[in-house]
Length: 327
Ligand code: ASP
Image (cartoon, rainbow, N blue to C red; front, side, top):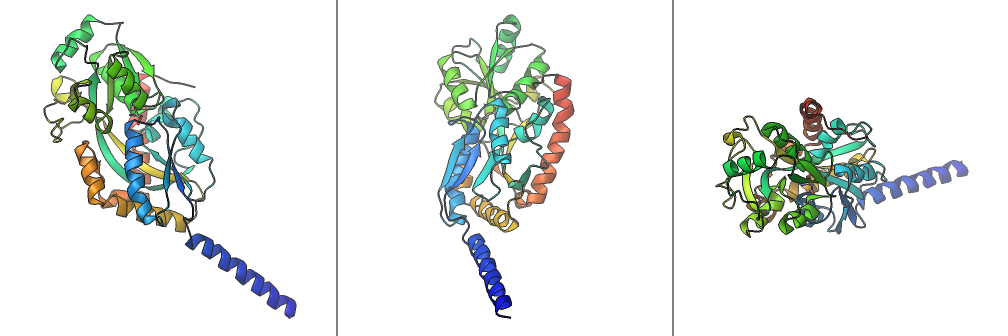
């Protein structure tokens, strides 16, 4: 009997410890892996989000770790293999859904190696170029492209990145092949575009708006079906209105955890995400950069999962038709 009682006591103690450990989550800094280099648009969203997310996570620091390369697949692979304890999360964009069609061998399975925590925002893209380009609007750019076939280069953040997808569709739409120059993220690509080392890039407004406003790059068009309302970008035509019918690319971001992260932790991060995305300063900062924070329904893990699956099915055939693969 005595032995039984001490066994119960020991069990009770360990159950108590386990629930205390969970209740204490998080009791140390949380890392959000950004699968692109620092200084780019995904990095920007993550850093802004990290500041507000911590409020719902016992005010623990949120550390951003940039793991760029291979269009976002290296960073995502790192999180897929990380301990499922809520201390390593991933902020990724549309590349989560486009990479599987672009790589013959993927280091993870998007639908089965991650927990879905909720979507964050939608961000348009802009077609931008170096200031030394002779073209000053899209019609002039189109003529310049036709006159310089075989000589044009287009920066991107690697196979599977949003800039790659947008650039691929753009080349297909104007029927001109360009030399793609891959970077670990569009942060460093932007430095080279400003420096005039590359000609063109398609990138999120969260990275391009300030550079366009500052006159450091030229902007030619937006990637969305409708023109934007952000003051700095409102005059830009859509690619669709410039003859590239049906061109419509919008970049979304979502938050993920490694598969197997405890439900209580997932619920807590999801709650922190919901609070963070309703923070007026965060919403305003996003709006100023052309981004739109998602509605409540899209913040549910189930909706996030459903959306990513639909995006994989939507982009797979488009990418396969464009025919660019990597091993
Ligand atoms: N904008 C990049 C892309 O092409 C990623 C980044 O650097 O945030 O996907």
